[in-house]
Image (tube, rainbow over the protein chains, first blue to last red):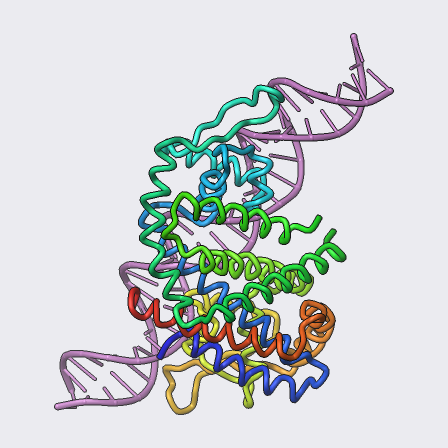
Length: 174
Length: 174
DNA sequence: AAGTCATATTTCACCAATGAAATAAAAGAT
DNA sequence: ATCTTTTATTTCATTGGTGAAATATGACTT
């Protein structure tokens, strides 16, 4: 039988029993949390699996994609840190790796010479355009049996949850 | 401004631009993937944050909770590996850590003496019962503005996605 | 009884990620 | 002109997970 489905079944029963011992527990919400965590981890695994042949990890891929998606194909380490949710140390490492492979370049900014301008190269663009399309079928398959309404709904609910998570972390680890 | 919301906005624009360059891309589905990955990672961070004061990591917590949720409070390393999605080596480590803290015990099984019976201790139960309730408010807050229909829908859609992911990985990395 | 399979642990080596602190360089403020 | 702030890099130590191979033990098969 399939792994994720197995774990979910197990989790359902487990939470059922725990909420009998501890009735104050918000059982439905706890289930949703666990579901999100499991599916998220599985999706993460899926992605890493597809990236491995290209010798990219998630952060490198994300960084490259951010650059690719920029109108001018460029950004700065600080900005990339923010959007790729990485520390500065790690971003330096990521940029090093991508520069070494010729997918991006590093250069000093004209206006503010403290800043470093990171720019995707033509080779970087070609690389993305070559590696992306083979992923499409699998992504499409994941949502193959989702109606348009399903997709809209999932999108809406995830965004709502994201908003609440932001509020939470802003309130506590500010 | 809030971090996750920021990243999502950025992602939305990025995918919009990429799908203009590469029109075959399943843009809506790609968005859902990224959303899942972002929210999942954030939730993971939330959880680790709540576990840190108790000096537990996610795998240890999950293992302990599986035991706690069992009618008889016991399991075997192999089974725990499966449901906690961990390798055997890691499960040995996890069990070591929990035994050292007196939260579980290890003993030989009666029926099959190859097996090791892992059992949660009374101290382990008390530990769980003490650490769990303080998490409830935050979990509840995450879904505070979700209607019952919202929750049902999210649950349904995540399970559907989980099922598809299982199919996918069964077909490819079998 | 011998051989094979199943279960768990240990050891070892390794890689990925993380993050704090020190450093460097340039911009901005007073 | 000096001090402060911003930005990026470097260094270093640590953590966490991973995985292969060897070992030990007991069960199952014939």
